[in-house]
Length: 113
Image (tube, rainbow, N blue to C red; front, side, top):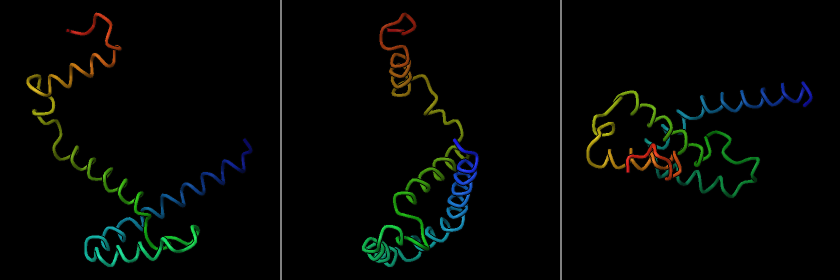
């Protein structure tokens, strides 16, 4: 690949991420404070040309993805290692056993079946 194309791709990626850093808090604020106005805004933007949609906000699927990613990160940071999830009894033990068997393709002797 040409060196200039790599630089242009990096430039575009950095521009996109910086746009997320600017527009995510703005979109989150709008969605929390005035959800009906945000829904009307999304309806208006859908009728625009694809390259003109969501000029001052993040697209809804990306907004959902980033919100779930951030909330999961915060949950992992705050809750940490929950004994209910890391236990070896009940449903947690069943999940661990299924994952262990799935990893070894349900057939090797590493399974404790």
